[in-house]
Image 1 (spheres, rainbow, N blue to C red):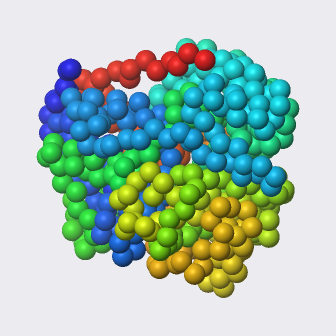
Image 2 (cartoon, helix red, strand yellow):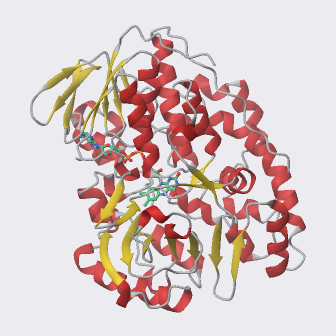
Image 3 (spheres, rainbow, N blue to C red):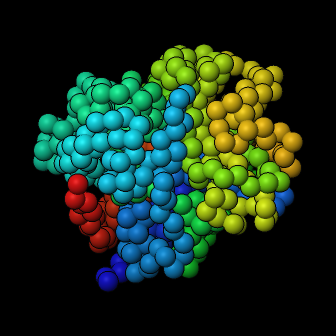
Length: 513
Ligand SMILES: Cc1cc2nc3c(=O)[nH]c(=O)nc-3n(C[C@H](O)[C@H](O)[C@H](O)COP(=O)(O)OP(=O)(O)OC[C@H]3O[C@@H](n4cnc5c(N)ncnc54)[C@H](O)[C@@H]3O)c2cc1C
């Protein structure tokens, strides 16, 4: 294993210790850069942090780990094994899908998945094979396009991207593409609800994102024992092993500029930290609203940014309960009229009368999350982001009651109210005010055609030299695997600037259909 350590001690200041910032810190520290990370919260992890309520433990945000092989690759670059730092569990069933009249299990093995489809949707099982076969080709053509930067218009005519053009399903939505495989509306939803990982509707989400259901079924969905927050902690541990410094409770007040060149950061304490380069991991919209003078930001000044399309938000409930439940690790409950529910959220309206929700019962596989005989339930309700003007101080009580009713009427959990020992609610306003997420749009700027690749904020930030972006707000986009890719792309760009060697990406893992 070749290990790259020739940074020549260039210094990098990273704003934010979310998974994007910490992945970049790990890669750059391994490659010999002098790295300092500044995190405003008193804990690391950002949206990937751990929430503790007494003896109950939850992930604040990400709970599904997909494309684990990418994580393995990042560890391998430094001569390490991911399994020396993290314990993974491949989930089977991957998740339960609760429709109004049936609950289908998404099995991780194609033969079992086919049987499950046939059990609920007779005659449709064979369509899974077609889906896996054709989507495997799309994935192989398209995913490499997401691993490259798009800093110039010319980058849009790269051979990799041109070879992918016939596979981009131009002008088609995810829901429409799934119609090529499955007749039943519910089955199409089983393979398109994943657009919610991007905070989008299956009817708006570009068709090329069949990559997400494809990778779930081809490569699996993983849990990290102890919670996915451990991923950020593992990155931080390795960064420190490689000499990086990570400062918590250290809010960056602004990026220091010399003309249009970033030259360091100034902390809220007033201290100035000069550096050769600056990497921004803070939520993109939040960073634009706080770290630079608006007059320097051109198309990214906050008043113009607000006119762009942002993802939905999430209403979160973290419940510590004094009993266990015989329920799957992940469960998605579809609104009776899912399309209407999603369209209401997209329009900024309240879709909660007939809501969809996601429940994570981590204790099904992981004893760490609660004391023996207890459970830690994580409930996520997709809701409109803060451009809706919804006043959550009042609204949250009513929504909590809707969630309780949905749990009672539509899930194996029934009436949980008498079992609640601990409870935390996070509203879209909390995402914005406590977690520094612009508009509370938890999955960043929407992944619509006109906000991807060259049209998304560039990894080498186009407004300033020596300034790079990592995380869900830049290319390739929101979601842990793409966030890891953003860190690798920006780290590679920095290395290329200083002519420091870095490893090439490994060819994609191809799973036969
Ligand atoms: C509820 C929810 C569920 C999700 N589920 C999944 C999932 O199952 N699977 C998946 O792959 N993805 C999921 N995601 C998406 C994505 O993986 C996470 O949002 C991820 O944590 C985003 O990482 P990031 O590095 O872009 O930013 P963040 O995690 O937001 O990190 C940015 C950091 O910057 C810090 N910061 C901001 N401003 C400053 C400043 N001025 N000075 C210093 N620090 C600052 C913040 O405090 C924060 O720690 C989910 C997201 C949410 C919100």
